[in-house]
Length: 387
Image 1 (cartoon, rainbow, N blue to C red):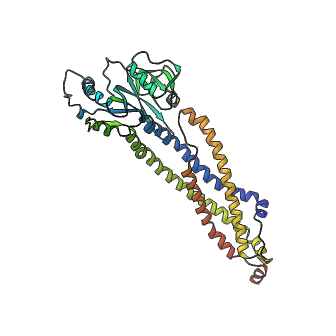
Image 2 (spheres, rainbow, N blue to C red):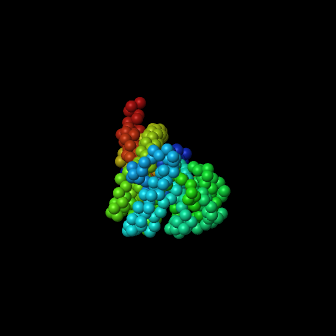
Image 3 (cartoon, rainbow, N blue to C red):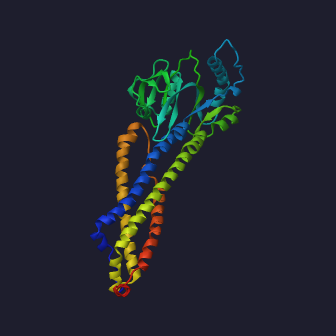
């Protein structure tokens, strides 16, 4: 007998058992994809800060060793000595920086900070305090539009991007999270995690840096500065190159390691559950297959009918998991992620490929118990002989 055995007979009459297998398969997809989706809020958000904002606003923090100043003067505080030394050094460096290709402006800025907290980890965003004219330059460069409150009018007042406001829960009139002296007076809407404000020129700030406004073409500011004869071997440059390094080494690599460990754990649990479920209903069906063999169906015909059943179950599980994931991601983005001023990525192709490879491996692993049960099939005559 060569005709095929329809895979839908069993599926139609045993919906509950098939559903159990499909649900276990779908849970593997949902758990892995949603975990990666939630972790993407960290990589996507911090990538924006580290590699997008730094295309246009970069910083040079001068180290003591590059200032050539005596910091032991007892008549002045360290903050005053450092501020004066930085001011003097900036008078030499800033004109040279402005001559570099790709540099639109450069000036000294006092640096305040605001936190961005993601699902995993947090990062600090630089908030430059500058003069009114320099503040206008920064706002124009970032295409910032005031949407609430007002622009800074007095020293130690700042405006923050809407995403920063949402993330920390700021309201107009609040103090910055890491500086109780600086007040948020307005909200801006721009493509970056950004903020800026007015500095008190008579006040010695402990955190100062050279703020470099770029046209977006500078990736390695240190190399550009060296080309102009600016030698700052000990100072820190925060540019696109440094941002990419931090993103990879301190965020992506760490998250990838954690994600892989969790994925392997999920995979191991699901493998065991699926194989147990599969073996249990394979054993329950032995008499059915013996009957097929008794009326003339070959073992290969029975085997391929089982494979078609499994393929149908896998496809249903993947489709259901995909639809559930889309619904949950939209819900999470609307209620949690976007509300906290975070970014995320919906389409994670690498994760989809990894999950599909895991499904293929699982499908292959299921061949062993199926083959074992196929070779145990006996016809009714053979069963009677054993009895």
